[in-house]
Image (cartoon, rainbow, N blue to C red):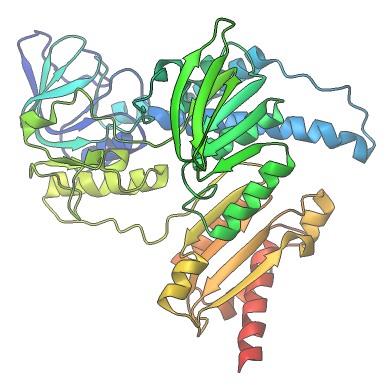
Length: 479
């Protein structure tokens, strides 16, 4: 048994290693849960099928961000002449790009140092294939058949791309396998206009692919503020992306003799079919529960995820689920918080909660986008007299300097301007801008205080102060 500690772990296939807490899954949630349990003094094991980091580090967030950086560099090269820099016509070496992504993943793995951190805390890291329940407290390891028993179990098994029951689905590419494409597709279809799909659209369009974006939802980024959604769609279309939202259905994929993939879909009752070099399905992210043997532990599942209560406890009182496994929020920052709470409850028998009151999210598209808190629609539904201002990036000096004036910051506040209810941005550094507003919201900073912050000049974050001052003026004009 591969372990990260010097604990005496049974080596016989028939032996059972017993722990206070067994964590299943070595992604962001699993690492956080194992660390927290060990810090609280519990004898802890972390079961992971292959390597730590989960989807985020190995095939998700980190690779996507490297691809976004690649796309940005291509865009910068294309505009270099405007700054008096002569650059030969760019060409993209896809194999070299893939190699860079994979090398960066390894560097991130080394920088995180999860394996050593677990070892230092006395956590047994077990890398023997996927685990499955054989009874409510015992899990069996696929690679060796050995068994591990936990007084409590924290499930942090992450998620996976949704597989659609379509004819020819085996010909699809998924977000976590785009690096396996043998070459840069000349024609690419992306099905799914959520966060993942939108980021892949930006990457491949910048690298030179002709891109068709499809979604059953009525708009791009359907969970974002509608103004953010509209701005990103407009930018995509101006970049040459063909966007089709509100389609009726996707019918099938089929492989042609020349290797191209025919994709068939319907919109407005009309069936359409077109050939692409690759079709990426980014249509959801259910929990990765296959083969986990949840029925042997009496654990209930609902809506493609494990059902938990407010304390992250499953229907089996000694088993908890955190991160993507419970389907509440598919974000790394949420996974960390939930995992720490779940581990605390598992070790101490407490009832800690993790209400995600402020959960900023966004994407590294062109332009970037982000949001936190209530959208304008949500805020007005609660209080028609809430205050909203939008500052366009055309009035942000740093954006003018950088020639990145597409975008805006929208701030939503209550009628008394005591509380910032939401912040939504499109444009350069949108994620960082919203992150800064999130910090102010978490600290309970009111609009008047935010307006007095002396932001450095010229910066993108200075738009926050300008938006706050406009809110004050808007309120004053309304009196």
